[in-house]
Structure formats: C-alpha cells, structure tokens
Image (cartoon, rainbow, N blue to C red):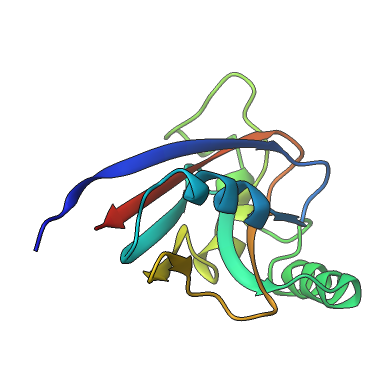
Length: 150
C-alpha cells in the first residue's frame, strides 16, 4: 500500500460573538477538492484553547439552543480562579482577559474532529456540518486541516 505525505491547509475565520457556531464545512470541502485523497481521513484542528471544533447540524434554532446550553454549563459571570488576576501568575499577557468560562466549556467539547474519506468522498452524513465554536470573545481564529491517506 502506498501512502502519501499529509496535505495541510490553514483556514482563517473571525468570530463575531461568543458563543458562536461558525460553519466551516465549505472551506474544508474546498481544501479537500485539491487533496487528491481517495481513502484516509481529514483532521480538523483548532489552534486555540478557547475555540472548539464540533460536527453537528446547521439549523438556526438548534444553533441557538446549543449557544444557550454553553452559557448554562459555563456562565461567563461565574466564579473562576483563572480570572482572578490578583493571584494568577501563569500564562499571563498584557491584554489578558477573564475567560475561565471559555476554557471550562472547551473541556466538554474538543479541539479536533476526524472525518473518514472513502472512495474520494468525505464520509459525512447528510445533515452533518463542521463548526468552529467560539467560546471566548470575537477575534481571528485559525483552523488546521490535514488530509492523511492514499
């Protein structure tokens, strides 16, 4: 069996709110068109600890439900030691923002998703879409897309 080197792409998106489900399925499919991959998988990976990658349905009312669910499980105004800059000393930047809620919400999500590629097609169901999920605040985000296989 002959394998090819992974092909890697970078997708850049900007969020406008948090939480926000940003559908990146079309960008991933655009990358896939030129991959030459027949069988293998595609890995979609968020380069951020406060932005997740998830597969779900792009239905407006469901997206609202999921955003509200994230707010309930990890409320922005909750009590997070990570946000107490009088005691926190690790991984601080000059423009540090209180985002403990986003890190905690990320624990229940994931940094990446893997999708099988079968006979030159992405093995996704008819309603499945790929989302970058903004959990923190509006900002530019980067997603790595890598195709592995033959």
